[in-house]
Image (cartoon, rainbow, N blue to C red):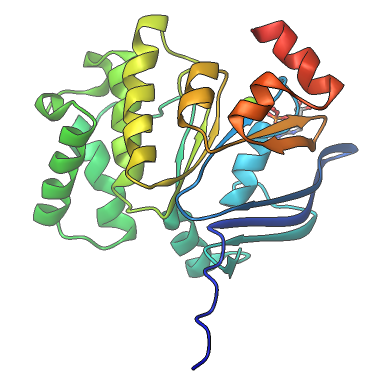
Length: 249
Ligand code: ADP
Ligand code: MG
C-alpha cells in the first residue's frame, strides 16, 4: 500500500515579492497555513498586511513567487480565477454592503451569480447564515438601518455564503465603535472553533491571544516573527516586535 498523499496547506506563499512602482511592499514572503489554522497577522501600519491579504485572492497581482490555495496555484484570470476567489472569503474594514438591497438579498447575491444557486435555496442558506451571525430578525431591513457591528456580521455571512475554504479578515473591527467590536470578534471566534482556516489582520490583541494558533508579525514587507501567541506576547525575539508591543500594550 502506498501512503496517502499529505494534505496540502490551505494557503501557501513561497518567495512572494510585490512592488508598487519602486516601493517593495512584500519581500520574499514565505508562509504556509494548514487547514483549520487561525493565523493572526500583526504589524505596524504600512508593513504590508493588507497587501498580503489582497494577493491571496489576487486582488493584487504579485511580481514573483508562488501562491497556492488548497494545493492549487493562483490562476491568472478567467473562470479559474473566479472559482478561486469564491474559495477565499474576504472581510474588510469597510463592509461595502449594497445599500439598495435588503440584508438577506446582500447575502443571497453572490451564491446566485457566481455559484449558480437557485433563489429558494440561496434564500434558505442566507437565512441560516444570518441566524448563525445572530441577526436573523434583521433579514428584510436595509444596511443603513443596522449598526456597524451588525453590518459587519452581515458581511461575514455574505462571505460565508460562498462556502469558502478559507476566510481572510483585514482589520474587520477597526471601523467600529468600541461597544460593537466584541459582537464581531465573537462571530469570528465561533468560526475559528468550528474549524475554519482563517488569516486575520487585527489590532485586537485579546483576540490574537485567545483565538490565534499562530501569530505572524510583519514589518517593512517582511515576516519578522512567526510563532505562537504565547511566545510572541511573552518573549518576542526581534527588536521590531518588542518595539511594536511596547507601543500597543
Ligand atoms: P498595512 O495593511 O500593513 O498598513 P499595506 O499593505 O496597506 O500595509 O501597505 C504597504 C505599503 O504599500 C505602504 O507603504 C502603502 O503605502 C503601500 N501601498 C499600498 N497600496 C498601494 C497602492 N495601491 N499603490 C501604491 N502603494 C500602495
Ligand atoms: Mg492595512
